[in-house]
Amino acid sequence: MTPPVPLIGVTELSLAGRGPKRGYVFDAHRLALPCWADALLKETQDPGAVLLTFDRHFDTVPPELPPSRGLTVAQLEQHAHHQLDPRNYDHILAALQGGVISHAIIVARARPLGSLVSKEMLSAPTLDSLLHGPDAAAALKLLDQAPAVLLDIDLDCFTSPSDADPTTIVPWSEELIRDHLMPRGSEDFWQRALARCVALTFAREPKHCGGLIAGGRLFETAAHVVFEELLQTDLP
Image (cartoon, rainbow, N blue to C red; front, side, top):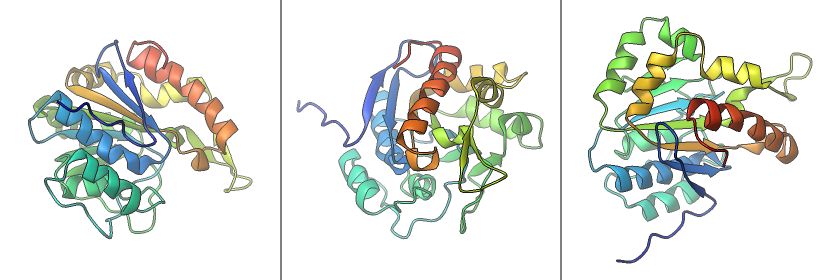
């Protein structure tokens, strides 16, 4: 059998904690699309994966060229690189339209122009508001019934625009990251999500995180919470 070809621009990780055993780290968030397909191909053959994504932006703008159903991982990789928008906001709908996922639970705050939320999506600005809102039961049901869960994190989820200058990005402290990702009372939610989670995708998006140096520092801070505390595994 021909060995799999590494995905371009993606660092693959082996995780040994609770939840996913496979991880993918990359810069451009649209590269999550072939990573999701790759993980599902390797870990499960069942359709109907649920995406659980944490982001500052709703990446739910309809793609101008959605992928066809049944594409291979290599074809989806080429599609992500060359057909999806370089602004990285149409990969979730591309995954839905291409049959890579069936539903998405989206924790995000900002809505890019043209973004939408469909019947296949549940959304809230924070995990705490999701767990105490009208969609809480529906979110838990999705996780409990999903043949596979994909955990997706965009690093810019842990930033805010400066009040003094909206073009300046303010990175969050480790305490704020922890409170956002694992608010009080969320352990049952995470146990259900991680029980079926087959992969973590982590987009660094340096352009949205203050640049390469600031983004690198924020990734280091966030990694302690994501890998060591949430997933209970070693740092990458």
